[in-house]
Length: 234
Image 1 (cartoon, rainbow, N blue to C red):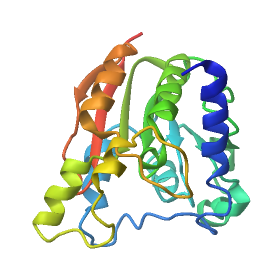
Image 2 (cartoon, rainbow, N blue to C red):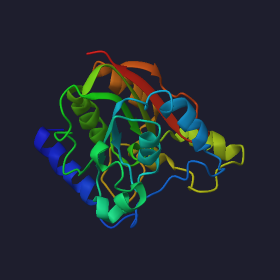
Image 3 (cartoon, helix red, strand yellow):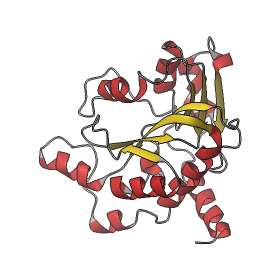
């Protein structure tokens, strides 16, 4: 796909989010649920956020952001396809720590508002499952400019095999099972709120091709979704 075609595709992808999740998607980290977000916090965030300059993709209303600020994150750069007002971000996060937060509504996948070599820790949950393979490739490419050497990243992605394994165990009732066409269309056209089943293997291969060290294709902190752990050593 040419760069101009990529840009058209990704503009349409960002536009497909307009009007979704009014008031901001909120992960209730402490609420008991099958995905056990407390375990995601303990494994993927708590060891890395204190004292770090963080880049968070898709903060929604700001549940993870608020927690990272509470444990002493130095600064959190929040990039989202929707505005802070639409998400109710500042209403939830509060203005007490506003000096330690930069919120930007993105118009592309370039991370141009994030200073070069400034980020110690990258985190995204419940966002990349809605991003196509092309969008992931552009995001992971642009992260390299923003990340400091040694920066750790944890990104949740949609993995059909893991999702179906949980369904077979009787633990998934929220989403319909992905069919074969859904799985094949991991880089297909956008639709409001659609999932892109990029999967662990493709994500791993993409990261390696861009020069990242992949620590784990899935840290297995979440029963339903894969969370890829990687490091930038550039």
